Amino acid sequence: MPQIEYRNIIKDYENDRILDDVSFKIDKGEFVFLIGPSGAGKSTLIKLLIRDELPTAGQIFFDSGVNTQQTKAETTSLVEEVSSIANISDIPHQMLPDLRRKIGVVFQDFKVLKSKNVFENVAIALEVADRSLSEIRKIVPNVLGLVGLSNKMDRFPKQLSGGELQRLSIARALAHEPDVLVADEPTGMIDPNSTIEVLNVLEKVNSLGTTVLMATHDYNIVNRLKKRVIRIENGKLISDKKEGTYDE
Amino acid sequence: MMSKYFKELKILYTREKFLVLSSIAIMTVTFTILGFFLSLVMGFHTAIKTLESQAQITLFFKDEFSEAKILELKSNIENNEKILNVNYVSKEQAFKIFTDLNKDAPILLEAVTKDILPASLEIRARNLQALSGLAEEFKVTDGVEEVKFFRDVVDRFKYWANIIYVVGGVLVAVFLSLSYAIILATLRINISSKADEIEVMKLVGASDIYISRPFKMHGLGFGVISALLASFILTLLFVSIKFLGIFSVDSKFIIIPGIKVGIVAFLIILNFVILISGALVGYLGSLSAVKKYLKI
Image (cartoon, rainbow over all chains, first blue to last red; front, side, top):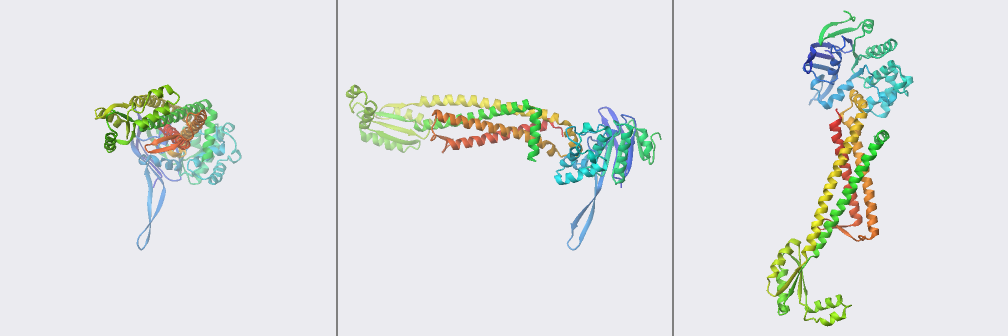
């Protein structure tokens, strides 16, 4: 059963068709590149996944795992498995925070808060979920350790390099231990060395079981990692290769 | 959570000192006017009720109308449910009152004997409106020479009280609208200055309640702080007025019909009303600002 399924997605902005009948599935634990030129519709697919926007037509299903619900019969104890697949468009507004804690997002422009230090930038993700201070003090150093920023917890964003800022952004996205990490052009604003650092972090996160969906138009990255590649052009799905390269 | 709120309020104050101070100043003026107006309303209400309760019709009787007939009429009048009480003033009592009032004018006293002064009935009604109708009825009652009814004083007082109610009401409405508008403006700037943080909070799964809570708290805070300042000003005003001797410590306000409270109790109630009003205006203003400007 796929973890994410885009089914016949159409997205129009006024008279422009941005996505035209796009369908694909992503299994749990996959690392998938979403490639294509600027304006192809990659970012729109990501926005639809986190319900920042709604599709004009079609459905997006997201399976955040399996809930186990125990119900008691008169004589026996029955354990019933209930699937937690949700059509993202149908999720009630008040449940969106839950969705966004299961899908971590990283953007090209980092979206870190300049007035907060590294620790606080990650802590905010936990604060909004009303996590206790002791939990925050335990989780934040862990995720900062995962992205290699343990020694820079007191630094402010202006004291960090582009690569460090993006790793900080990844750390924040990982604070809730999401099922999926979505990265929209995460290396678009950083130098080649920092790009490698960020990719290493994403591979590490993926190796720990988190599904990674990364939109990029950087062919070096795609060719280097040899992961599944979904190509989008003019809003249409052009190809879907298991171990693809940028030019295939 | 409160320490976080005060920290954010301090940041807001540092960033937008002028705006925060002017918001609080305007709201303080609003609640001071509201408190002053409420005090005036209560004061006038009490004064009118007192005047109404003291207002009376005096029936002066012809000399040939005997005391027995007057007392019979008194009994009849007392049976009327509109009447609160009736007091008989005989010729002798009238003369005594006259001599007491004019004891410094011996020439005048020499000229007057008890036979000249008429006997009278002092009639008080349960309300002023009833008194007015009764005065007309008594004019044609047998034995009555003259009916005196000082209605104009009460009516004029009521007229000015009504003008003050309207002007005060308009003033309160204008300042409440101003306060509401300034809360909206302050929070709008606060919300736009935190646009990045709000965007990040949404991305990492903050609920609408979590995002809007600090802004609602700011509005509530402004309202409560302003109300407390207004309460302080009003208390000072009351203390000053008391020292000027405009009213005594024993003065009573009629809050609702039948219930009188002293100055201290009135001030406590007034400050409580101001505080609740402050909290309400602040909270409702911030609620509107959040609804209008916080796109969540």
